[in-house]
Image 1: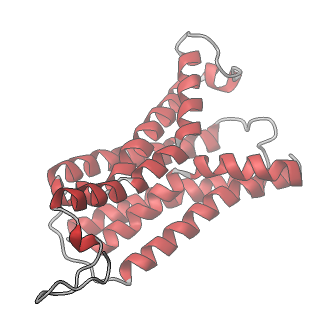
Image 2: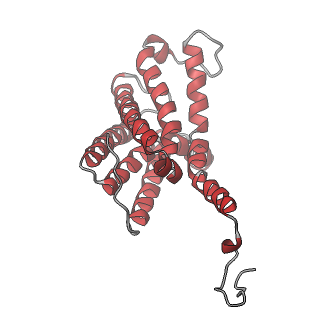
Image 3: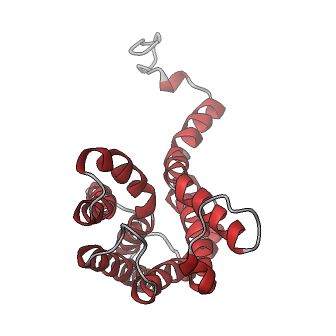
Amino acid sequence: MAGQRLKDGPEISGFDNESAPDRQVRRNGSTWRLPAALIALSLVPVLAGSARLIGLSGGPELIPADSRFVASPVPVVVHILSAIFYSVLGAFQFSTSVRRRRPGWHRAAGRLLVGLGLAVAFSALWLTQFYPPAEGRSGELLYVFRLVAGSAMALSIVLGFAAIRRRDVTLHRAWMTRAYALGLGAGTQVFTLGFGEPVFGTGELSTALLLGAGWGINVAVAEWVIRKRTARPVRTAVVEY
């Protein structure tokens, strides 16, 4: 019982009465909540991207075909595949237990994620620059938003990689968190569009602002997490790439 004092012994709390296996189960459960939530956020884009790949490979059209992608499928295939693996694999990099117990796996996954993240960012920039805009997704404002998001994601990955090469773990985690937040923008855009379009309509300006809000929300949350994290003392870890 919390607050109970044993005879001739120290005061104990409810958690102090837990056995070591019970404490381990509780810690493991909490450390996997964030990766699970991040994967859940990316679920709709992952499913939509998978459906697009099935259609482009000659399978059934689970979502409406897009003539832009049929005419030039390679960039969009690269973008979808890299985004799926980046969003799912990247979520596990936020697991404290993985970083502490499997540092080798964390380093190997990190190297792979650098390549995947850059593929996501540069393929997104390619699609923005060389593909005609989709119907209802045109306009200069959205074009600028996409250029900024793709460029910022690529720059964040490069800066994060450079930081870990200098063994600056705090800065590395900050930049990689920003990159992942931008890469997961499509997941949040499901909600900004889903809730925003019935209210603000589907015009060019409102659509651009709602899509931009998806990236903006993710970046704001990432900055909050980074500042909360850096407010606590951080142990220097040996993480090499």
